Length: 76
Image 1: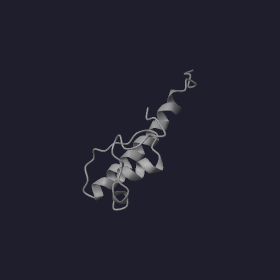
Image 2: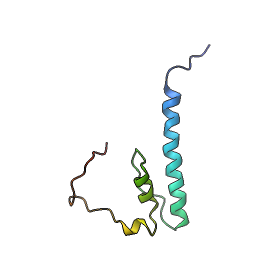
Image 3: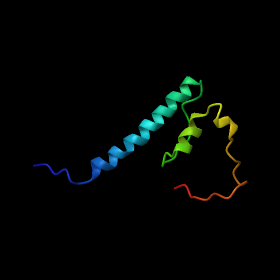
């Protein structure tokens, strides 16, 4: 009998969600004529997903320039 209780399948399965979101963002960008190369860090929060899509609404809220703000979290 093969053991399936090692924990690897659930860990890897969770990453499929992230990559599915990334592919959906890439499809949305292609519809707008944008490139497929874009940053999307994990965790893929609603804000990060929205900003990666780059549309008329995200253009209204530009990202601040590095060094002009103090981040309240740390990207790992």
